[in-house]
Image (tube, one colour):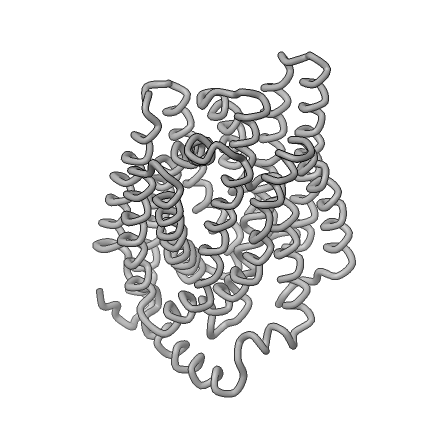
Length: 411
């Protein structure tokens, strides 16, 4: 779809894009949430091992970060919309293999294609948000878009709570049907934002790349290095425990899918309520303070996870679900503060090569995910379920110290 060069037409297209992105987030949130609630337990049923499940989770994480610089470069050089449209074929191939999986080989193939599709979708979605609004209000804009996702999450979790579906593979089928509707929105409604600006930026990026690679530029900038080190450490520290959390909850406490949904819904409700205020707060107080506040809520959340285990071990099983729910409420506050600030920072690392720099940053951050599924699964099986949560708790204290000492606002 061609966009006229005058500002009125560009503004009109941007508004249409934002409405479309909001609806896409809503649909995605509803369709994906049941899938992700049962995905790890589904892997566990086939593999019979939390450790092997952790390996599959790690494989997915590796696939999600390895191609990101390449996908980001494609997005900067060619049409952002065309790059986004590549998501759907990969998604459906992956989901079909997962849907019919009866052995680890099918799970491996499905995991690779499914997570590869997430690379194209994630970069494209966030870049369209970043390029479709006022830079001064980018925090609240990201908050609004993720608000729509968490509204959808609540609907998906309520759907699981109803217990209508007996075969969890039906959730996979529902995910595929709803994703097809999002594909239609991307095809017929979404338009490339500021096409002339993007074209010029791509030319500038190509010329700049000849002088200095993006990798070297990031390495030579102390501020950018500090930013990426923080996000890499954050990914590693939280994922030690979160990478296998649903499989661990089901194995350790014997929770049903309905109970997992009941716990998870508090995360979605809290994030939905505070996502827009969180974005607004990030605009007002700055990204650094917003991230420190986020990590403080994260620390409180992990304290609740550890307390829930202690109380449960002492025989007070009645308090397990309430304490896990409180932990997820605090997790929601963590996400509400973290998501807008992180997206504001990572989509603006470079003005002319936005998607490439975003892809590279996600690649580097993804390094933090590589060992976590294996580490979390091993520690859970060989030591204790709560041990990864203790390590994450200690790690979050370190993150807060790092933010205060080394992190600085990017201009």
